[in-house]
Image (cartoon, rainbow, N blue to C red; front, side):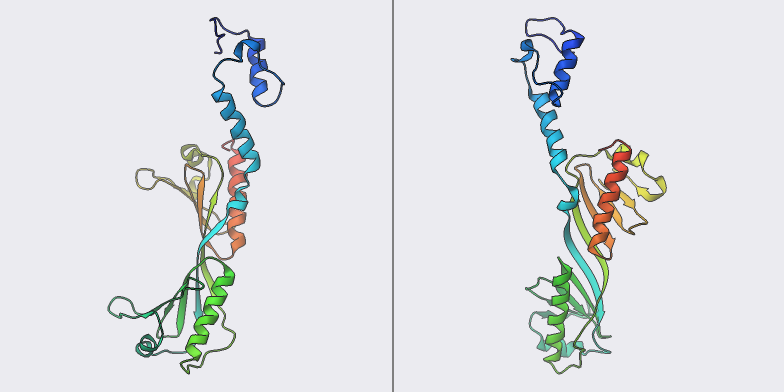
Length: 237
């Protein structure tokens, strides 16, 4: 209940006038309220403006791309490890040669079968460039490598921000129970499995999201749009 500075409740008509003023409904507040604490109303207005300005799709950021490729039929890993700069090979710990590139910043896991796994790329362009650099390095060792190497994306991990806190307890009740996992005592986020796009979304109370399992960057954008639509339909955002 709003109270006048000198004591006593403010009439309902004036309370309504003051409430509307918070969202721009009326130009002024009652004179007797002008000296009272305005922090709650300032917060209300700022939160309203921030929700209008923030676009979750624009906050999307690729954190990691994992892809695989077949570069040749077989490779001598001992020979590779001794000739390639920045190569690491300890077959007791890992069955492949680990090659770390600095530009782009990618790790290539090279196996004796000729298969390669690339991880750490922040964009599709960097992924393509990293694979071509690896191909050039192998050709320099007189290994028969095709000129136009191709890869298959296995997983794209993307982060996003809804721009506002969310209530995971209410989301757990409102979303399809068959598609979610929420055990806050074990993990602070809510796990939501989508069928279209086929990704897994981790939702946190801060409004942050992690989208994993995508095969192309557009999958994360579609997932965020779907999350926003479902939260909005439930009145949770």
